[in-house]
Length: 232
Image (cartoon, rainbow, N blue to C red; front, side, top):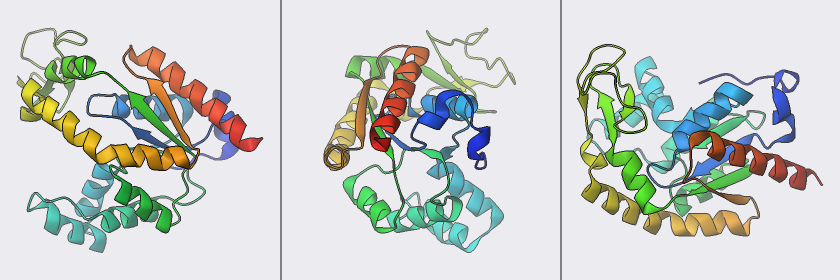
């Protein structure tokens, strides 16, 4: 994860934008892609709780050892432990875009209890057909983890990674019938979460059915508007 950039080093129009951001959206909405684009173009660090957990485990920290007990069993790491992880790596002066957390109302309330300040929450609206197309066509290299898409970003040689020559495979949860169930679970878990942030007046929604560049442009526009409105 990138470190905090001083305000004067922020690029472009980012100074006018909110910089403590949560991205919400179903599987396949493009949260990770947009978060990476914000990091590369604007200098706002993309914070993935999964990456942070793996780093703590790798370092052998106390927090990492506690998390590993759950990860080894295939169980979810408790919410409070994840929030402790975020507090350890972020401060109220940090800029960040959170991808994949919080996933439900309880997690959002824990963030609030721990005084983790959030400036903007952007909900990515995507129809089911788009999500199924994006995820069911996804293929991943077994060796290096490079991600391809059979239509949007196919490998030069079918089934083979361009980078390392590894074999490409489809994740079980990227099959259409599994995707539909994942979407059902997502909606059940997040409807109260969306309402929670809407009532706080920090929720924005954008159409995320198009191409990455146009979705990114909408995201930046919303964050700039959100920033100006909060300052006024």
